[in-house]
Amino acid sequence: MKFKAIAVSIVSAFLFSLLLTSLNSQAQNRPQPTRNNSNTNTATPNDWSKIPRTEAEFMQGCMGQQSLQPAQRNAKQNFCQCAFSAYKSRYNPQTFSQINALAVKVGQDGPRLVNLMMKPELDRCSNQNNYHP
Image (cartoon, rainbow, N blue to C red):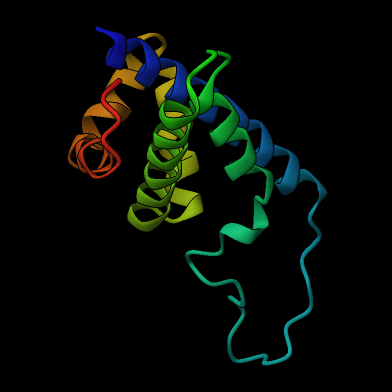
């Protein structure tokens, strides 16, 4: 039950922050001129640098406000970093933003759906870091 509550808060915080960050960056970015006119798409599909605050916001939401012993805090931090890496390796920023926008629309069950989609990776991170929420 604790895992479910943590997972919901992690994903909810991350979904909201990613959605806001991506909307903000889209509104502020102007198209850059391309150097090679034959290729109009200069961004790489997995260019997470366009949303630099996402990792910090994810980590903050994942870590939460709980006071933990140093060993537990370290295990949780490693788990959270592993989870974020799993999201980054599985989805490009555009697809991830679309999934998260839909999850927010779904409401309370949206984070549960995203957690279910990421279950194998989150289980691996949990076992790898000996952190079992």
